[in-house]
Image (cartoon, rainbow over all chains, first blue to last red; front, side, top):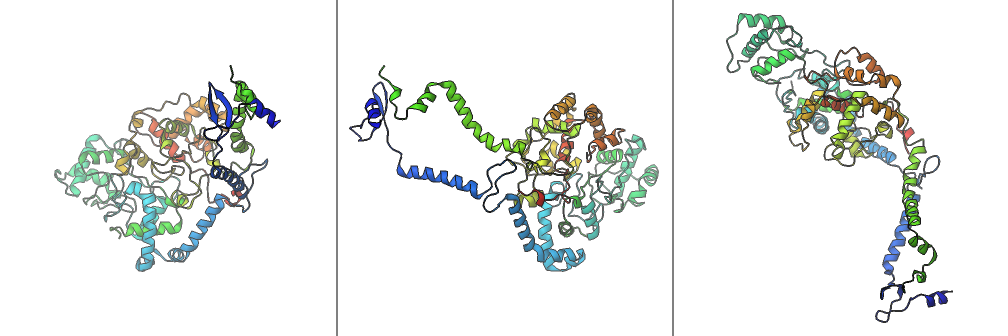
Length: 296
Length: 250
């Protein structure tokens, strides 16, 4: 048979190159049937073998009820568990100390302090920097953590409580929930009264271009604001009422901004991080924030 | 003509295929479909494809409208929603994503590129105000951000006229919306967009964990509100304190 086929086809040995043709011919142009290089053929078959072996060693083929598990039962979720366990073992000695020590003890111990600051810095960059800024300097409406003005308190345990439960975070029952009334929107004060009040509030911090304090302003302040911000405007961290007598203003100290704050009330919202972060991370974050410069 | 393919040394089958285009097309389709049969079909019948978890619910109508905006604006081209089971990702973003968490997304928003961070667990990570400020001008919040601003979302009132049809359509492909949910879709949108709306308790019952957004803008409920409602729901459904990791290892 091969002989006969060969006879019928135009396969022949090309005289010039010594290589057989494929037998295809188009208008006198023929095609050489040059064999593939031996190294290429070997590589090809090796990759085929590799692929088959790979699907045997690793989980690959679907079956009717699941899939093959591979020779060693490898899977990515198990590998992750192992890696995380390993990480926990590596961290265990220092983390155990961080867990058992109080925040004050951590601050007093240089080794623990540096560990907590490292853990805290990483967690801060991941979770807090988006609002409070990479260096904790905050921005309009987002508190600066470097200064010594604290809305909810700057002592270690106060910082920790704020991180754990957030501010005005609905799903956390222990969150800082007090909120400034919307004096304008809810009709508690008229626009004129708000304007007088704004002028009056600006006198506390002796801001530039303030008008002289008036009796009417004082009365409005005493009736509406003093309960939270204090008679002297020094604020109250229990209620998250900022100090109005210093140069630090969360939303700005110009009159239109203050009018807008009195009109709309409310306040910033901070997530309750105990929903997402573990105890040690929160302790480390408290230390880190406390050590940024303004800690009390 | 002297050309004669009969003489090809390979003969028979090859000649049949090369001279019969319909047969060739059919053969190509069969060959190409093998990939699909092996890689895609099993996912539909295997019971372990989607983990058994508590808490995953269909999107509330407002979240669904936000999802539509997320798709429309192409957020998936720069943000993934897929935390892979790798140590560094789990350390940064939280528990790796489960198939169950995106089982009601049609189409899913896993994405494949991270110009920005993964968003699979962004829900509850920032306040609504932050999301608002950030969408309007990302660099006001993150100075090094390369994300474009979406200030027009603030001004665009949400058009949700097709939301009930969309919910019905999603039901056809397996999202378990109930008749009550579909009937009340437009009310639920209002209820999720305002604090103290009378429909809020019913909304919370129909969609547990739905975050109610206080919309005080003069434009009513805007596209921005919808998008934020959607973002705030990402990755918060499953309580991983109760989730059994080992039962779902495979």
